Length: 78
Image 1 (cartoon, rainbow, N blue to C red):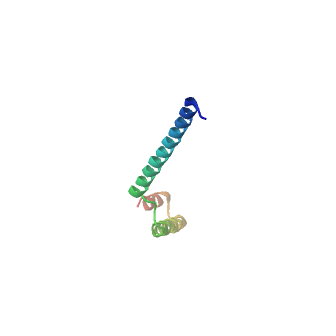
Image 2: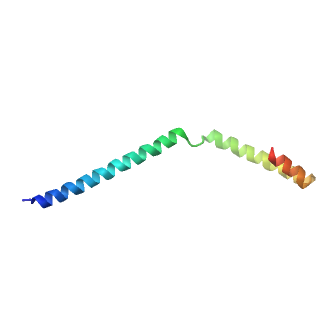
Image 3: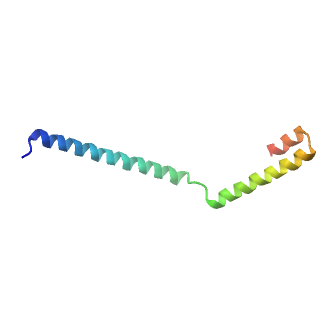
């Protein structure tokens, strides 16, 4: 038979575990809210960004072949 102290101890640990579960649920909900507000980029967005970077890189390479530092800086700023 369990004593009052043993039962109280078990109840305490059960409450702590439930509190931990609630904290985890709240944390996960906050993360989900953040993802809804700021979703990660789609594959299409990533591909467009890659193309833009490649285009800028090609433009810089062409400018480097025939331009001075000021011309390159002006082109990168665009």
